[in-house]
Image (cartoon, rainbow, N blue to C red):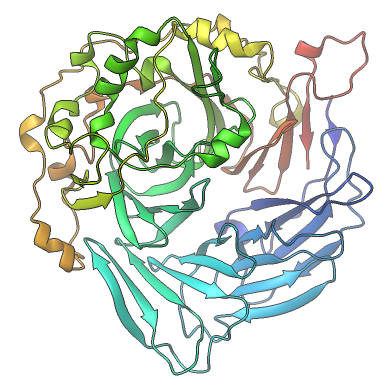
Length: 560
């Protein structure tokens, strides 16, 4: 049976269901050792609670803070982890009418309201995040397709801002705010067409990945405001995006019901995953089961410090093929690479996926490994030098050389690599599902079927259709809609048969309404649905159960 961590929240009377339920966590370094705090929005209401994990239920009658808004509703929020203490925490909240509020739910103060008169943007806030490593800068995305950079120390002014062009490229432009005194917003980004649905900073904070309703993933160097690479969805808009813990891969989800894995270094799609029956609303990597293990620690130890210190860039000379050919002699030192990520969707299903060596480093024959590798490598600069490389969108992108992290060779077959992690990592998952009756089946990675990705992918099927847009379009903000028929079969959007198709490790219905939250914590997985249920799914061995109970078959779901 399930034990209640928090209860069902009443449905908002003013049809707040249109704005997704979101959950944010922060640790305030409390002396008592219980420093985790939880914020979530439902309809017009915003709650702030002490989070006691999967073992204890929260006292719902005693929220640290609760706010009810009139005329507008919370749509998203983000804690500043850098400044959080037991006495004070900075929480940004975005709203359906376009405003952004900075509050302190511990001191119960409302510090500032940005875009209060809606002079900057009148459209719904879709995503708000603190700039990594900053105590004062934050970025806000709107359904207008614009993003704004704010500083909490500056005012927004009493008149609509005037802008001056800073930089522009294909389908994006960045403006600075033109005024005598410094005011918000510091920068205005116009990206693509339609709503800008979500953005995510890379683990090192240097790059920004944006997904838009026009179906494009665009990755920018945040400081230099340069476009690093692009990708197009199979069809429809892209709704969510996340980075792998080492910053090498980006996963997106959207209205094509697919999850798409994109290589940051090679700027190309390396796999798609099909398991959802409707739009994918959230994707997230699991940093606690994502692992890189190598027997020779001098080459790549896979430690947390290594993940933090990696420098990412593009150097075509270090392509997948050349990396593999260089490391063939090192196969005696096996590497186990497993990236675990999850996705939830409007089909109320949770899917877990594994990205392993058979996808990242395909087995021979290498000539069948990827669709456009030879075309991309034909224009590679000399190894070890900086160069101007053709991006996946046909534009030139200059990046420094020697910035690619150490390559990882392929290792044993999929089941063996997965089993090597199973002993020390939480690489299986079980839990109760919604309604408290059904359960997740206990998963064992080595029991799953081996997936065969080495089928013939009709390698040269779409070589002739690679787009060659003129580079002079870099100086124009093109707002014309991209014809999907012209991008399909190009590096922007490979055909389904041109890239491996992942199968989910698990695909389970866990709610009655569409899912809007997926967060991986050390001891559990947190999900939430539009109905107002927030659930924690305990990882195996992370819940204190009686010794007489079978851990594998015990339900471990918790309703928040």
